[in-house]
Every structure is written in C-alpha cells, then in structure tokens.
Image (cartoon, rainbow, N blue to C red; front, side, top):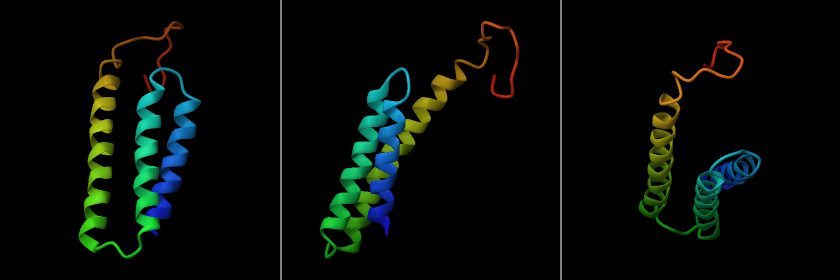
Length: 91
C-alpha cells in the first residue's frame, strides 16, 4: 500500500511541477524520488521492515526539507503587495 501511495504522489507532484511556473525542477526531482522509492518498495516485496522504514524515512526527510525551504521563501513574500493593491486572504 505504501508503494502505491508513493508512486501516485510522485506522479502527481511531477505533473503539478511541470504545469507550474518558476523552479520546476524541485517538484520534478521530489516527485521522481517519491516514484522511485515507491517502485523499489513494490518491486521487492520481500525487503525487510527496516529497509522499508529507511526508504520511507528518507522520502519524508527530503519532503520536510523541501517544505522548510518553501516556507522560508513564502515568508519573504508576505510583505509584498500585488500590482492591484488589493489584499486577499492569501496575501
């Protein structure tokens, strides 16, 4: 079940990254990592529980680092007003 989740998450992340503006390679790289780990987990069902935990932990560490970097970048945008001068719920 975990392998299917990681493969689906990876494919969705790659599709969203390709459709976005800016630095697409972050999303594509993390999506590829998720998909690769999911494929490895699905391809070797006899791998031990420790190996499974290590693969999943590495995936979660990379996701966490990506979320922290993204959070700091978004925090820098909180005082930037858009061109129309309107404030929205997200600005």
